[in-house]
Image (cartoon, rainbow, N blue to C red; front, side):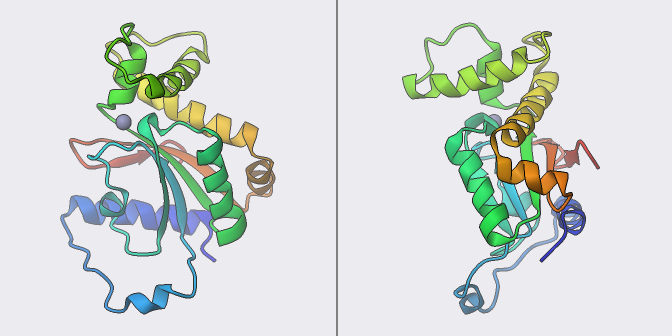
Length: 193
Ligand SMILES: [Zn+2]
């Protein structure tokens, strides 16, 4: 089992390899994964195609338990998936990853929902809840602050909704860490490291 500190170190080093354009080849033998999985980190990120998690963290098959949804929000199915990774797969690190130029955050900052598919409106409502959280709604131009605030809101929501993760983080066996991926530089900055 990989500790959350060791897992975070591997993600930071993997992101450095990605930025150095070091390739990652597929494993020779896929049969090694049949018996089960032991991911080092569970990552909740945006569904944006410019944020391919295994690539940006330079991680191979079996390393990342990935949960993706537009705007990296935490609904019941996202929280349940993260709980499964921690409780059943021995994963000790949960990462909530936002990214620059996020369309979902941009849409949440706007006032015109006329072009938004109806089923996406609850996603925007959830992001807006996070943006209102500290009482200072960022200006629409300030997408960076809003994106960071959305990540922190998701972190807080996961911890308030999940007794499993509350227990694990209090015992310091698991860490829930927020981060931001810059789609231009390829760098991931973790808030708590
Ligand atoms: Zn996004």
